[in-house]
Amino acid sequence: MSEEKEPLNFIEQIIEEDLKTTHSKQALCFRFPPEPNGYLHIGHASSICLNFGLGLKYNAPVNLRFDDTNPAKEEQRFVDAIKKDVQWLGYSWAKECYASDYFEQLYSWALLLINQGKAYVDSQSSEDIASQKGTPTQPGVAGPYRDRPVEENLALFEQMKTGEAPQGAHVLRAKIDLQSTNMLMRDPVIYRTLHKSHHRTGTDWKIFPMYDWTHGESDYIEQISHSFCTLEFLPHRELYDWFLDQLVDGSKLRPKQREFARRNLSHTLVSKRKLARLVQEGVVDSWDDPRMPTISGLRRRGYTPDAIKNFAKGIGVGKRDNLIDVSRLEFSVREDLNKKANRVMAVLDPVKVTITNYPEDQTEWLEAENNQEDIDAGSRKVPFSKTLYIEREDFREEANKKFFRLKLGKEVRLKNAYIIKAESCDKDYEGNITEIHCTYDPKSKSGSGTQESLRKVKGTLHWVAVDKAIKVEVRLYDRLFTDPSPDTHKDKGFMEFINPDSLKVITGYGEQSLKDLKIEDTVQFQRLGYFTVDPETTQEKMVFNRTVGLRDSWAKLAE
RNA sequence: UGUCCCAUGGUGUAAUGGUAACACUCCGGUUUUUGGUAUCGUCAUUCUAGGUUCGAGUCCUAGUGGGACAACCA
Image (cartoon, rainbow, N blue to C red; front, side, top):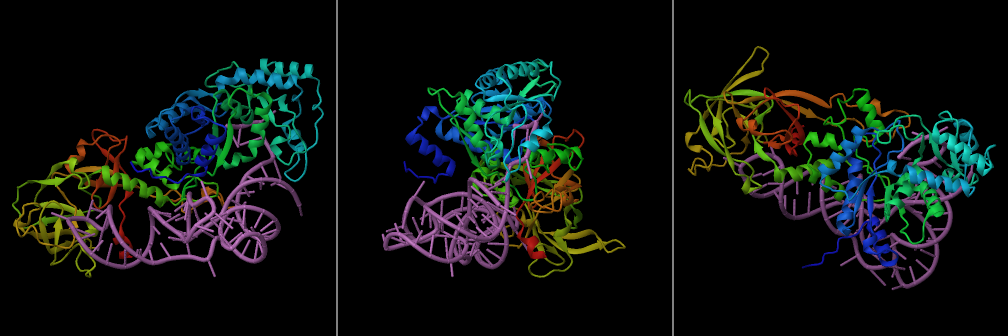
């Protein structure tokens, strides 16, 4: 066994350091804490891979915790979708937790704070509270309720809890430091009233804890050793620690928050709020529209869990602002699918080819290898006959030497079949080619071993037999935005950069074996790309989504 | 006129005071019954200026640039 030391990222370094000084290996525990207010996206996937990956690496439990403290935004369907996505990625959580399960505990801790004079009920409007907080460069000032007596605070908080106090009349604030350079320490609101039904607790509660008062405490309850979040929460760390200071029991593990940079992906958005807008405004059909960078969208697009995990692993984790090019994601999925996807033939922009010297009513079933990258993938039979479709762009009447495809008077190999030669072509009145007449070399059959079959001809084309082809709908996707970073412009909103051509729907012709595919199966349409069966497929009509095209060095050469 | 975070090829990440590495992208070869795959090659005075040190991408100081912070959101 060779002990190859993989370099550690800064998160792993923090853990290793703690393992040497303060933590036992058994104490390690992580969590992934989404708010169920939307669907998970590729950015969350990175966080999932980070946390669950650490769990696997250190053999430590990882909880899935729903940060469900705001009934105004959260829904059960989002909880269900999130669980499905995490499972689909292949991870299992130690415990399924809900911040709402801690409402009672959080409430009694709030009482503790009030009794210690460290929290008070403020009865001002949110505008007044905000203006008293000052600005990042100016300190805040105390409001009139800051020194309310404990008994009065207790009584008012009780009214908030029972619903006796109208919604929005009061909030509970921690009494910390209005002078602090950190705005979050200027007496942050820890409870607000919300007379709204919660997807889990119904109408039991009229008060709901704020994020800061919930997150660290939930980590503490679950005895999470390391609570990793994105950089924007860095200023929250001081508050996170202050709250913990108020209630931590020295005999228990004290969680620590550490921050990493969110992964930004080019030509798309990684913000639930903004993605929700795309759904609401009908830019895309749904959260799982294959153009969406959501996990469900990527799944429907044909991405595999391995592709996403390798992507996350490949880009790593850091602390600086970043913009990862989508080509990195595309590389990951091609790399994975190249090994796994069976090859099939389909023609997306057909032009008819007639083999003039081929028998009229004959159909030959030719052997075709499913995947040369995987011997175990076996082979299948594809029908060959006199009339075929090939790709329109695979034929030119005349072309230079760089064009390795069919041209008049020249030969080309039909994949898994014969070598053909273009003799002539027909055109319509507009000059469009309507049919190509070819002859074939009967002794050149693929795999027959004859001398003719071994001839080297530059260029191999995919094709389908017209009679036996099945008609399929194919959806071609392009990036959702024309700008690499659509939501970072000061003068323009991201909606101004929407790519009008992000979806193109066409009809293609595929070989018969496509019929055997099931929903979410992915194949390679040879020479074209990877395509996956969309859930909208019916008995009558198959629908394919293009996951990603093949690398195409010809396309660049051609123009 | 604040506090905090960050700065390594086009992109992302490594190098833990000792020869700047890996992957993607781009470009150019080789192989190929997918213009795919595989494989080989090209692409960096580590933001700047000082300092500490035998030695600095790494430590210190200042500057420059980018980012976060003023929700009864998370």
